[in-house]
Figure 1 (spheres, rainbow, N blue to C red):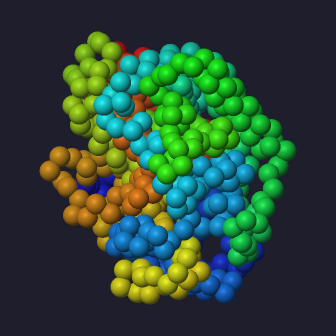
Figure 2: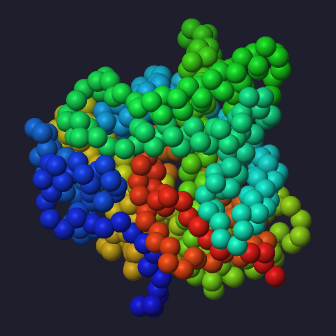
Figure 3: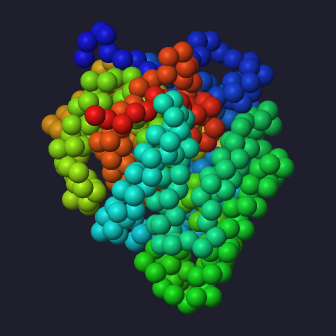
Length: 452
């Protein structure tokens, strides 16, 4: 890659130690900014914090140690659980041990390839509707609402086949409001509080949670009342039975898992597409190359399941997008017993900050790491270590819907690029900010026009 390679916007990195107050301010403003420059030079930085050791990890071996090799010793951090449980309860994203395994087992069949490919028509329709919405927004439009609606449309179909009480606009607003509330760090979050310590939600977050819960409980009740069996994720949860007791999930458990799937299931895809279109808008030659592939593979017809594997360059763009802007740039784990992080020991109570964002931009592992270069994922350029690239996490708790998200994003991106052209808006500053996920602050306006 040349020295003139495109370097997209990125959060600043810390160049000196921060005081406790400064740490709280940075975490509240944008948690990914807490990463020091040393995280992009070394692969593990350990420092004391409130009587325990915090290990910031940015190397593949260190992450594999925590997330796979001794995963049972590393539990999701108390802070993450205190942030998410008021919304998600004890669902697949927050449960541990037997409860987590039971939920994962129940949902896993919903993400096998054959079932995902049946959703390609829904993905195609969602992409068309997103494109129409973007054009209707005028020559300059914020692309985030249409992409969120598209992803919500697909996850709605995957969850319910056909929903009865799922108003897409209302649900999108509720998801945004609830995670805006829980995702902002508070000064009290820096304290080593027990996992069960309540973390109160604001009034807007509580109202949004009520909207989500009410709508999803109506879907559950309607399905139970109808007695109809469908081939969707709600049906898998309704039909699941404990292998020992024969008991099914309570409706509240099903509801909380549906909220998890609605939030995570559309957020990852919509954000990846948002960043991908921004990067392509800034690099018209790459955008043209992608559009030509989409037109060559799809022609004038609707995308089909067999097209996904042929959209090679589109997939490279998505992989490179999620390298630069991983949906979850940082996650946390806490050691429940003594363990190892690569060749070094860790004590019970230690905290591991797993910085996928730093791993993906580490100059030890990537050439020109801050540059946008889809060809680094070209066929034949296989990574030496699969742990160098982890946009969906890793180990047994890796994202259950990663294949679903990639299939959906490939179909939607190809459909949009076949029809539309995207260009940046002069003077608009794009600022990546992390709440729960890494997104452009305040949305992302682009110039959108029909491709000739």
